[in-house]
Amino acid sequence: MSAAKIIRCSACNAALDVEMNRAYIFCKYCGCKNVIEDEQIKTNINVQGVTFSAKTDTDSIISSAQYAITMKQYDKANELIMASILSGTDDYRIYSLRVQIDLLTDDNRSLFQTLDVLRRLEANQGPNREVTNEINRLMHFRGMNGVTILHNATFNEQMDYVVYCVEHGSDVNCVAGMNRVTPISIMFVHVSSSLCGIDGTPFVHNKEKVKAIRRYLMQHGARDSFRLGY
Image (cartoon, rainbow, N blue to C red):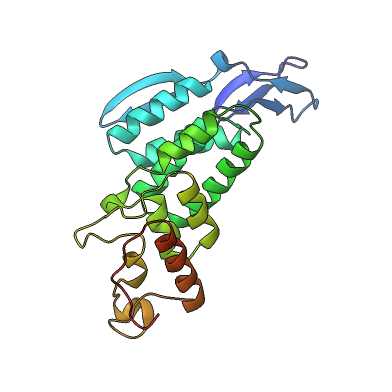
């Protein structure tokens, strides 16, 4: 997190330590609520040795985070995005970038938490289709080793997200990695004994869930040559 910036309380003039992208802060001396103007707080962003300043309004954060992602500075991009999230933003573009970082860094736990927020924003958007269109685009985004959200959903046996991905245009036959795994075959990858206890055993937690996911994907056009007794 970037260093705090100091501004003055509008009521008592006390110094306030404000982290970047805070919408407001209560003075610890007099209790006054101080609304933070965007131009009052700037953050220094360092990407591959180049330091520049950007206002912490949402558009600037998005531009800076996008640039950091293109330079593979995922920690810096995530720092910017988390600052915006902690400020209480409901801008779907921020959460879309977080999904991209989660895929690029293979952070499944964060991925599904972020997708939960996007689902809520989509449900609350009314006639505005911007969120849905962005989610549809995300379904084709390739992360580490070329995996998609659907690969992650099937590998983690998340049936609700498998359905959600397919409903938003995921390719049920997309391939990823050197082994060219599909959303179905990734459920049957062989893993080491350090992960499952029995070397070569498919990484399956719940056979019934896997069977249901496989059946659903095949009903929606997935090709499958993996049986393995399931």
